[in-house]
Figure 1 (spheres, helix red, strand yellow):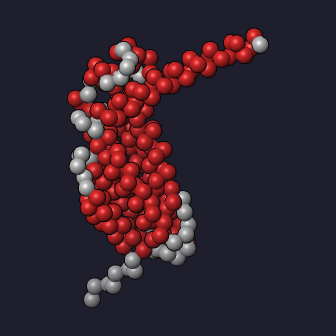
Figure 2: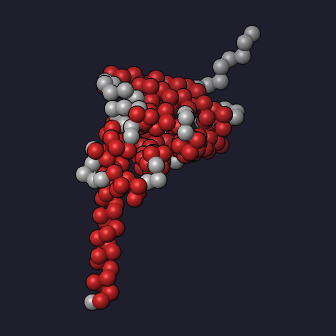
Length: 213
């Protein structure tokens, strides 16, 4: 009984701390859909929660640390959306379209937040390191998929690492530009999806162009 009495308060404290941190992260996500990261202050953020300003520093060292936490949460969602093609080895067109559809859906929901993170990375070294690490993970996974497809005879592309980097960064920039502002429509989503699908599949799986005569 003594052990359970000691453990239960500790669990409640951890739960309260987790709930407190999550409330701050959710408030930050909402506000970053409305304004650039450079305009978001700790005072503004905490005013959007039920907590005091000092509570912020119990969870985060500064605003950049907050953003790093947000990147970590979004990273999991991005991998879930893209895993079908990145980790698959079946029909690349079917897996590729399904993954791009889910990725476009994610950007339709989180586009302004993802754009805010990308913009913050352009002028903060710590955020840039984390963000580039996130994107590089997708570059590496894409290059691995290209190599698997080359081994299976589906593509004959040379330089898979460079091809992967070009495709992944192009996709990140295009989706951020399309969905980075509030007001993107279903037509925008459909156009972005079809454009990216065409570029990816033609780049990776179209027959080699005929040599010039």
